[in-house]
Image (cartoon, rainbow, N blue to C red; front, top):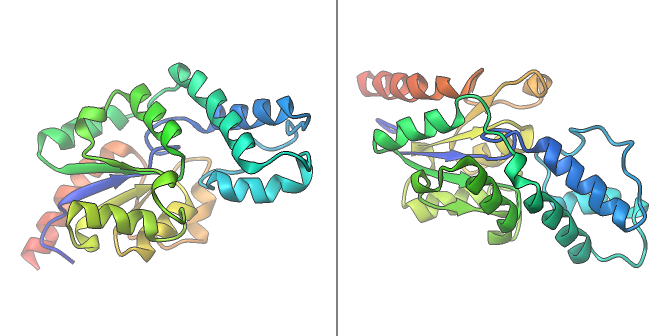
Length: 224
């Protein structure tokens, strides 16, 4: 493990912004416009799952003549139109700005498409603190593949183990760990059960816990 962490890679949806309700609403409304009623689905049915996989999971319920690109575009347009109603999760903006002031490089690694990633960053108002973002459009495979986080490490020019990844889903943790990053799981009431299925390097209950965590880990490793 490196003497200190040199960057943080943030997941966005469900980690920095409370976007799951809007994602679900966009999915339901867009699908309804094509004649498919998905209102029976739980709100968190596809948490952390990228849209390509959602398409395959729902394909049998959608019209046979509907293609994936048209369906996904409709969902994204619904999402972007509703972005002004998004709210940062508690501590998200303050934590990112505090780390920015400390000079720690920060990136975002998302399973959402570029339109949605940019809409989220716009809603959060943190673009000035983020060096770059990786979207599903930038990779040939999304999470849980290690490719998104591997690309982030390459672009940062850093050894993966020197980067902290913060995630709220099992899908994201698996991706970060497979890429060799130090994976931190943000535990919530909605996702706490996922800890049984994954092995994060650490878990935190609040985003603000990242600040002392980074300092504590750095000090501990330096003394080793």
